[in-house]
Image 1 (cartoon, rainbow, N blue to C red):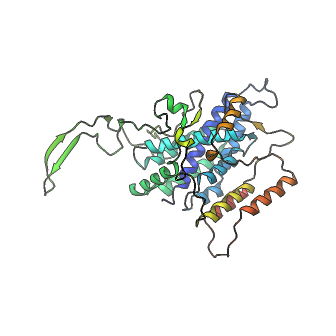
Image 2 (image 1 turned 90 degrees about the horizontal axis):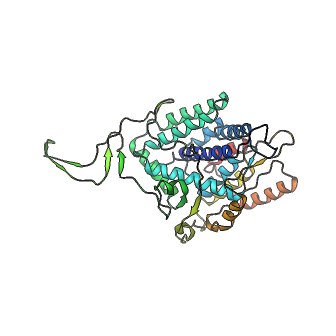
Image 3 (image 1 turned 45 degrees about the vertical axis):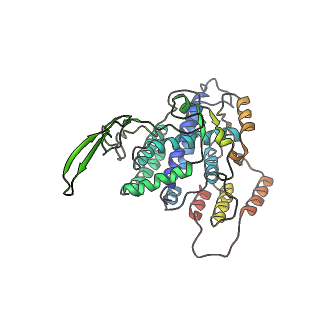
Length: 389
């Protein structure tokens, strides 16, 4: 398992989240002069994206994120994105948050699977950052935050070997291996089967620096080529035109990680049969393990951490529905399997004293005390930064 994977996972999933929210906010846009107080406008859309991106790319938080550390569980990361999605005036209920997280994870899983080279996961990340900068063109301060993160990525990953990138890719695939949620875009494009598994292509450009398959070369003990044999590989491959740019500005060549929602189309998610009938082998082990303390305390601190930006004045939070109708949203919430449902923390713009006391009680139950150690627990510095955002 690579300890350099967390920044790539966080940034790419965050990029997919922003794509989805942007698409849904645009779909529900109403001209400002015609909108009621509870309806979305273009100004609201930009405000939501600016608030979320500003929180996501907070400088101190990024510094802690880039420190070598192991990945957290799906549930823990899900809690982070739930809090991040509510870093503005927008509010999502549990069904919409479930759908949002399903779309995020399946999209990035598909991108990791299709990366021609392990190193190309970095190009996928740059594609996400390039698109994010397009959302905040009118906000130079936030643009500088994203550019600074780009420089951190270049410094952290620019000199890694192919073997280290392969370990990162393998760590990501292990994280995603039990997720088989069907997504309508993938099903329509025939890149996903009805069981939720992706279809890997047998055509297109080969990885940069490699040759099109179909030729076997034989050499003697002196290293001289003595024979060539051709074979049919059954695909339709071509040479890569050029390598994607790893600079701040440039042609990434690779399209993975770009916004697949830029063309307006409805996106649905469905649980595959395999996901609905998870066996005990694929469910999270509830037996105590050495990471239990870090995991539980991580969730507990997140529950009371990252401060949510509150709208000025009496302005209420806006509700965003990721489904076509409220009835469809309610049906999705009722039909979702329990093992794939996460407990969502309902974040209110104003919290009363009773809620705070209840939260403190829950956090106290999560904390597992042990003898103090000189070295801090995994992730403590990162979580402390979240608490200050």
